[in-house]
Length: 213
Length: 100
Image (cartoon, rainbow over the protein chains, first blue to last red):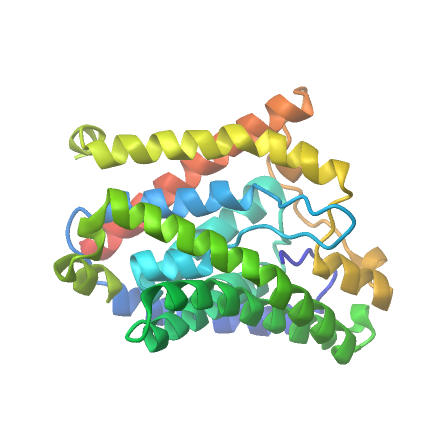
């Protein structure tokens, strides 16, 4: 999911980076003042957990593999605005410290994983939660990562490096993650259940209204 | 503030969970290597002939989650510890900044 440098044209990368900066700026304004004092450690633990979980590549023999992205988990635990900012910090750390994802492509990677994944996942979660919370959490994980992959597929398909082969990039990225996203959904619900069991106060309405923004 | 946080049971438990995830990372890295780990992005690049276009502008301090001079297992472990600590600090900073 992490796009390296060279895959996107410079103008395309700059435009997507500009959009990401704008959206994160709005997210920061929306999250500002809506967070309870002392929420910092919660944000830190969730961000660090997503980073550590992203290091665990799923070894699928003979097939296409992936790793947990965590957009849905971070959106549900922190709310979409704070979640987007926390995920952006993870993606930036990966790029600058580990070369995982290009620095010129950082804006696109932030757009895909910290914006599209997080906001789509949160939308799915909010729509489905009144009917069934487990389905909502699973669906958020599944469709969030699929949406992020589709966004990446469109970006890559519009680039010269990929011969402007939009159909191929969208099919492979979207189709691949539509299947792999089932694992993302399953992990999301497992971790969600574990967090609810050990830290139920995170989901009390008092904290939820504050942190979710 | 920092001292108070470290005394909270949930925070200490969270650090244990993070440590377990980091300890698992070399095992997953080895397993991924063993099955020729490839993501849909790499497949799309191979199919469209874009694979050779990948370049590295900034390799990062610890390229590909490795530490120069350390073997793959210890290198991945240390890289995981560093990355987890950095994202933990960044997350705390974001949370604090937005509450001020």
